[in-house]
Length: 306
Ligand SMILES: NC(=O)c1ccc[n+]([C@@H]2O[C@H](COP(=O)([O-])OP(=O)(O)OC[C@H]3O[C@@H](n4cnc5c(N)ncnc54)[C@H](OP(=O)(O)O)[C@@H]3O)[C@@H](O)[C@H]2O)c1
Image (cartoon, rainbow, N blue to C red; front, side, top):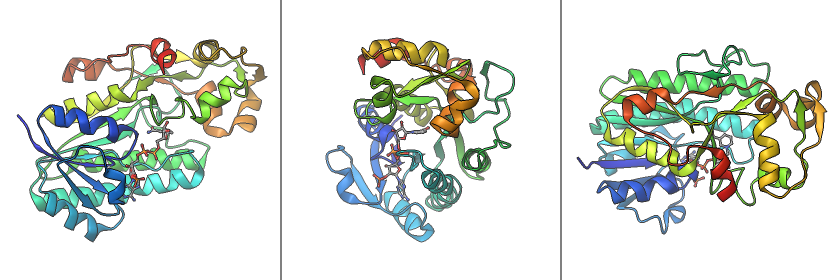
């Protein structure tokens, strides 16, 4: 069944991949954007303009779009700085509240929202399910804020009175527009031998290609299931495995090693955490419940082709 779908964040990394997939399935797709020029060339059926942090503007935009399904892909993480994490936390808390209120006012029936699969507390594992606690007690203030913000986003989406809600917790994205694509900061650092390998490098990353993230969002739009779902590939990998392999794929020298306690100081808290402590994310639930599976099952082939 096709639907009127409003995509907030249509100009972003996932939004750009998602819009053509929704259109190809026959959905009527409207974008909510801050700047209309950003939506040019996306092949949309409609564009409405609002800053997601402006409740009145969001309400007016959503009322004019009259969506049945609202997709929330709002973040501001380019170059994940402390300010970017703060702005993204506001999009996940205030922005989500504004979208839900507006969706409710217009009589939408469903909300699909983006969250992250790698904000679980680094306990147990190495691969965790959706039931694992989030990293609310992270020692880094920006990451603790992120864990609180996605907790609020998920609670708001799942408890919205008149909407069925589904949350997609994406793994570490690679593909066009990401940190792992040509011109992306991590790819450049690995290619230049500037991303050292902590010893031991036991942090686990669950990668996800942007196209597979978008395919999961299409499934979520079309399903009637509620809940929280990890979306990640089938090959969670320790940094000790993926980082040297990534360097090899890029024709770069093997990464130099540094003692793990130095990683945070050299790389920043979040990258140090990714390489030394992060846990992977199981995709069992989305495979079983939404019949989604990654078209690129492993970062080994996906990163090589990127
Ligand atoms: N998603 C993750 O889990 C994650 C984590 C760490 C790093 N990264 C990296 O971050 C990059 C993606 O950056 P990004 O977070 O900036 O996402 P993005 O892919 O650019 O998407 C963000 C979307 O939200 C929109 N948006 C932001 N603030 C808004 C507001 N106040 N009102 C309305 N729309 C708003 C943006 O619109 P505009 O076009 O107007 O900006 C854009 O469409 C990738 O390189 C990825 O590798 C991602």
